[in-house]
Image 1 (cartoon, rainbow, N blue to C red):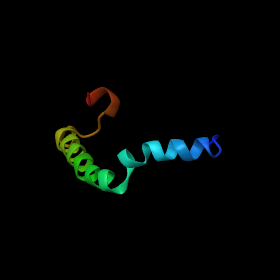
Image 2: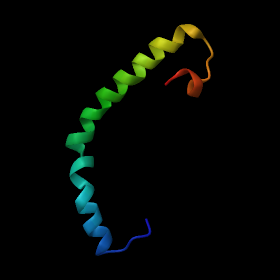
Image 3: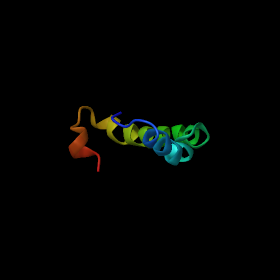
Image 4: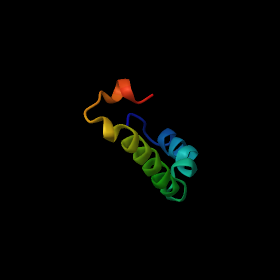
Length: 55
């Protein structure tokens, strides 16, 4: 946010590939899998302190 061209342009180019749509679109399924596993584990417990319960 506090960087102006040309430094900003060079920085954006350097991180574009790892955060592009072709890479991040695959992450949605991975995150959903983790979230489902967590909810399945703690759901039956009722109310929990998320920070203390989830390692």
